[in-house]
Image 1 (tube, chains in turn red, orange):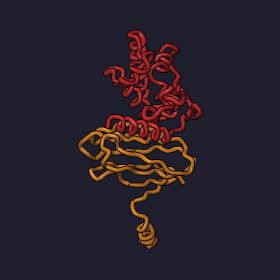
Image 2: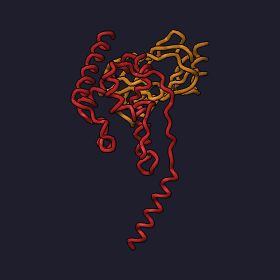
Image 3: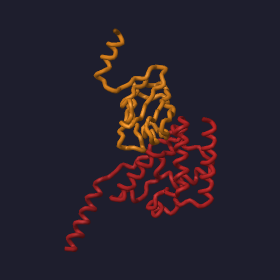
Image 4: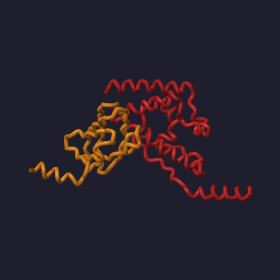
Length: 148
Length: 108
């Protein structure tokens, strides 16, 4: 019985490999322009899901993990894509909303997701990196608000 | 007479609204969703889209395809800047109320 279950599981695992997703990195249309320290920190913690410069991990080739990676990158790019930052900036309302979303994520410490941090320990920001992003965000929000 | 004919001609096409050359089109959000369902704008021409929230709750006007995301407070009106669009359609929705349906902006 136990052997049958293992064989069934192995078959399901093998069949799951047939469902594959393409790993695309479209051209960068207009990347975020930020101070180097901010950019470095954002690249380290966010760019894999929130840009067109994804470093596809090994798990992106192994179902069912690849399904989660594909979902995270697809959804992440839809919600906030640093490679399309120029497009956000062309509308002040959108720009400020994206900045506020980032500020919320930093304040509540809910990004990157826990399972991503588990697999990518280097995505964890140091306190100084966290602070430099928070300060930059505050300045950007203030300057955007005053120019509206 | 001309206006009557124009009105009759527009009837079969339902709630589609065409933005004039110099117009700043308006999308209203009420309890039933967005109005109009489809907004037609001139392709290759930048425009300012006004979004009015007629409900008692905040909404979030969002279009993934056009990279637009703005919160509209109850009773408020915002302006969303759009660059010149290539001919085609993009969808928008209220990210705070997914059951409210979605609308389309079509550039022709």
